[in-house]
Image 1 (cartoon, rainbow, N blue to C red):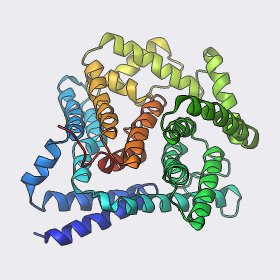
Image 2 (image 1 turned 30 degrees about the vertical axis):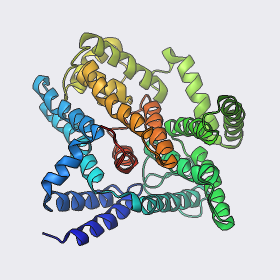
Image 3 (image 1 turned 180 degrees about the vertical axis):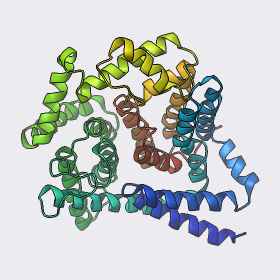
Image 4 (image 1 turned 90 degrees about the vertical axis):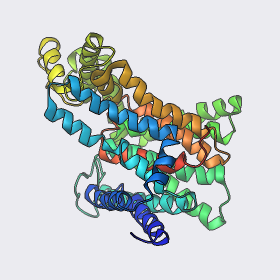
Length: 399
């Protein structure tokens, strides 16, 4: 066994490395995750670990949510796809409790600094591609410069980073003149980057984040908060609309394709609407326990052949609520929402304003963007959700 002091120190270095690699590389983050899990599983003190995890209602809800996926294998026909889903959701069974067990509040600033440094590096590469100083790399294009992940994942991750930077500037507000200048420049560059990249869900998340931040800034003084929201949101939206070609075109396309759904079914927006409508047909037939962990593709194909044969089949309806309702019905929806319920409830238990505010903002932002994609099935967004949750809700649970 490793000495306890050495092990704890090793954990913190690994967590800082994970925070840095999380937005940059799947393989790099996965290597760190494997090392963390290996050390945790073979480091002893199992009773203490168990007691800490079992005392947390958030951890229990996460573990039970995963076990629902295991139980759902009992009435699924496509076992291979079911095993695929079990693999994608393992964070909620193992990684979330492990991170919850090893994170320490005194190192949180190091985690956040490492994460923001990675976002800064991503942003630099994004601008270099956008200005055509370097050729596009990996996922990036000149029109949509998101180098290390797709815009579907990048913009929500960026929105989380923007929240942290804005929070430091406007609410924490204990910055020196140099720090204020640095954070302000960083905030402006990230905000611009949000609208020169193409992730619409992340852009929606940005505006949701802004509304939350305004209310937190004014300490929920409703009149001041609403006034600021009605001023800032249109101002930023129309500035982005008039200055960003990609943002303007994607907004126009979204509105046009939604209004003209019948003739726009093969567009990105049209497909999402079709996926939701067809998923609802499956849900109505299996409202309580769903079709099982692995049967979404099989059941969707049946409905699609009847309702919309001209649209390709899908294994992902780009809506987390639809995925869970099809798989597990209302029981599954209750299981997933219980995680968010305890996050919100626990955020109000914190005496520290940052943990209280960020602890509320995180679930609210995810609850909104999960209407537009399955963000608890994607690597980057799920890892970010689990990583930040592991320390935002630790050490202040009430019995």
